[in-house]
Length: 177
Image (cartoon, one colour):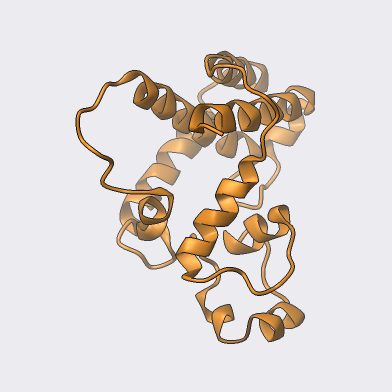
């Protein structure tokens, strides 16, 4: 499955979900530390815009990063920490500049709709591969893709059973900050 097909599927799911949220839910805390639901949606909007520009921009060189090396600087304490903090501040301020959730949702929906339609894929497979790459090993426990995404990114903490099952690998979590 192509990157555009994966994004189309993921964006379609996000559009369906945010289109059904009551306005008050956009101010609720998300699992991204310090970010409200509306902040996360605006962050995703910026990523969607970058993806569309990337797909439309011809290049003559091979990529210099892959899904794993792109995210490596964003591990807790990584070299991308200062930039990530500045970005987070910008996102929180910009997300609140909309007149309300309907404006943000409409902006998201317009952007997400620009990705070509695709058959139903499994975007979380790419997330699993990326997290495995950051971990430096295949996950040795039987978490489903959603659980791995949540625990691997620190959105849900590890419990004692997780730490026991992961052994020495538990110290690498979260894999992204």
